[in-house]
Amino acid sequence: MQKDIEITVAPYNVDNHQAILDSLANSLNIHQSRINHFNIVKRSIDARSRKVVYRMQIRAYIDEAYTPLKQNLTYNKVSDDKKVIIVGAGPAGLFAALQCIEIGLKPIVVERGKDVKQRRRDLAAINKQGLVNTESNYCYGEGGAGTYSDGKLYTRSNKRGDINKVLQIFVDHGAHPDIMVDARPHIGTNKLPHIITAIRQTILENGGEVLFDAKLTDLVIENGKVKGIIFNHEQEINADAVILATGHSARDIYELLHSKNILIEAKPFALGVRIEHPQNVIDQAQYHCDIRSEYLPPAYYSLVEQVKSRGVFSFCMCPGGIIAPCATDLNEIVVNGWSPSKRNNPFANSGTVVQITLDDVQGYDPLRMLNFQSAIEQKAFEAGGGNLVAPAQRMVDFVENRLSIDLPKNSYLPGTKSVMLDNILPDFVSQSLKGALPLFGKKMKGYYTNDAILVGVESRTSSPVRIPRDKETFQHPQIKGLYPCAEGAGYAGGIVSAAIDGINCANAILNQHKH
Image (cartoon, rainbow, N blue to C red; front, top):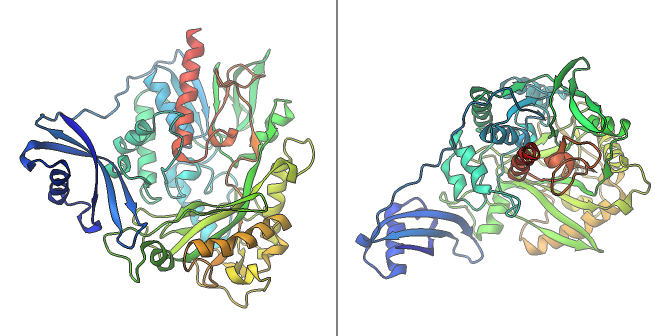
């Protein structure tokens, strides 16, 4: 007999097999000898009371033998008969490629940036010298923006596809099995590169191709149908299906589509700052303690408020993390955050952003939200004074309209400069943040403090452009064989949802082949 049950365990017993077995037997009111095996299905921290516990969803096998299922997916080598071009080697592109192989299609992945190993040099130049390589940076290159920005796998996309399949593929390629059960799974930016490399090897070993330094510069279209792509302005690849998985920062792709009169649409997004606290401030607030227990991970938070009918919310919270410079072009400042697997840095940061609606930016140009986003990033660069120095302000100073005399120590490596963020952010964004931050402080003790720093600007929360597609076929309504995919097309928000969308696009191509 199989029995699903929830138990609670103290943090110091979270990995103690015998303690979990004791709790199971007590909860089921049976002798331990009858429990032949148990699996942890889901695990989460419950810090609502002063006594912090782990809640575990357990599947127990009672008076029944347990036979483990073989989880690893197997692939058969694909032929050259049915080719699919996948533009972009982020999670959407890589998982689309794996799914193509699984269903018998040959993926050819073209990536404008470099492989994960080569990207490191360019990231070092960004962090240490403030130099941006416009084709290889935190956003462009193998693994996409997720590779060097944390590896959070939390998603609400339960209805879009098989989340467990995505997580299992990560485990098969080197991720810790804990991601299968943790309520907020996380790989860590230090471990993701090895996993991404292993996924590439699986693609190559099974007949797929992966091309780096291969920037899409044109689409080959005849009579409303895709026939292939041109990359680096001169090299052509032919195929009847192209998955466009270029990420939310590939502005040249939107401009290319617009120049060819291929339909794109302006899309709402969110804009704000990245806020960093000392991690111990967040630990004390969330765990109701003076010093965090060694058995608990650095604490996270999720905050949301409505300020005059406008949403203000935390985004991509990074416990024990680092604020990173994520510009993709010259003369702009874009910040993001990431954490290593141990989340052992002394700071906690989170994007804190305000909804930007289509009504906020008047006009009919489908690129108007993108241009609005870009103009603010350029203002941030000018305010910082160059070399990716970011404009910043202490939290209470910002709310009370004071220039910060000095700035707290922080994790942003290119450096910060004290400015009035009101001079960079649109007025309605500033006012919304000023209304929300004290309210966040009422929800979470210690949050509203001048020990926290606001670093500008957090602007790439999602794509400011949508590339439309048919809900059934996943194809662009004008161009047969063109499959807009994931974050860059406006259909995903994070590693797992992007991976699922890549899988769905590959399946949609197979369905078209069947017809």
